[in-house]
Image 1 (tube, rainbow, N blue to C red):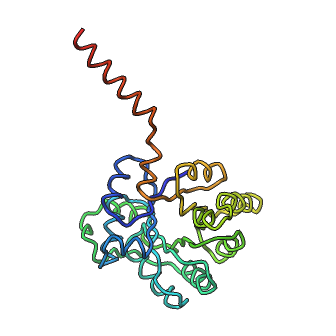
Image 2: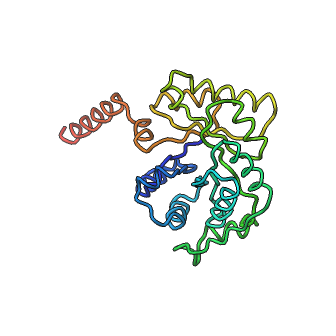
Image 3: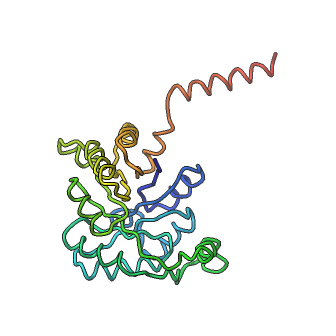
Length: 245
């Protein structure tokens, strides 16, 4: 299972990237506001430059035509951009249109445009022009995932923690979508989102999620364990004593 960071904080993206475990970034309007973003294009391009991974960028409208307009614009910012669209009727309409026609990533305005190795790689691979991938977000039912995939979405994002908060089983939703994908031989990918604690990560991995996206503090929790800390402290203490022997 791949690990994504759910954030717009550049320092968090840098830290996770240094670990060597980061395979994608998901953003949303709330994350952008929290990060104080004023120029969304420049910010998304900076994330793409730092991590060079798929970066979900969410539309900020509920009108289908405007979703299409925004999504196609986002797709020009970087070949790494994945257009994020809410799973509502207008969103399905937009997904169907956005994934139908190729868009070229011009990377216009990017601070790293000159001699960018990411651009060079995509140019060599012929992937600067592509049908934009879509991350269908705010999924709370299996049928919503089925509809989003039918419309053309590459990713579906069930919100695990938000379902748990209202007494439903978010992990079971991930398992149900995974079963549908397997039975129907669908190629869509499940991004388990709104994860609240480390056990959620383990549970969605066992349930069949292809990707888990999480806040940076949760990523830190995944590596922390009191016995690891105690064991390391003991080893270091023994090492210091061995130097004095």
